[in-house]
Length: 251
Image (tube, rainbow, N blue to C red; front, side, top):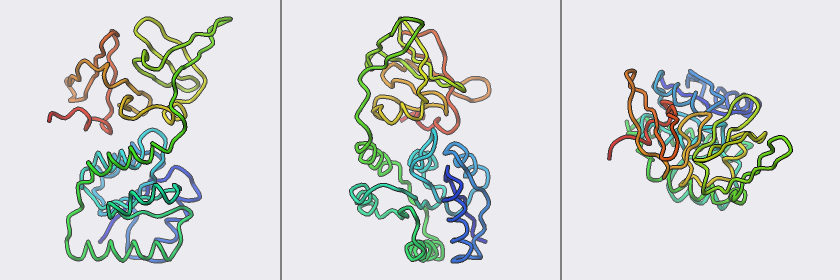
């Protein structure tokens, strides 16, 4: 029995992909549907599927982050709404991708390749290095990088230069912006802020936490085996979720 998960944060595309897979590959068993990248990673570790259909852009952890974290545990097929320039990067890496809205003929081609790989018992490749390069190329097409964060505190507007910010953390309504000497809250969701942050400088370590990489002093395991990050210039310890623990594995 061949198994798969689908990770897509929008209901209609997710349901449509499942419908098309049921029609084109009825013997394939969809064992989990996920709306977030972190949920997809948990599903891969829990269910150990043969295939993961991963949306490139999901809240928090992207499909690229998931593929990077699982390191060849299953075959990956990416769904994306990016333009041809970005798709060139996928083609160069011989990675299966589906341009949204997914065309039935294109899905049939991907299925044929997956069946061939599985029939020959071809191991799923470790895409870590390639995913990192794709992430840079795709995010390079994102919105202009943020240089300043402005936050309203009563009658005062606080200005935070991006190079001074240690970390961002989100709650239900606000995003907390923390520097070494000050902090404030902004109404812009962390997901939107991340689109303007350089992923080589700011690392996501939890669904609700993004930290400046060069501010990290150390990552220490607690009694439960979970990482806590300590920062230069801040007394706070930040939790690292399992989905992002791969960032701190020894070289």
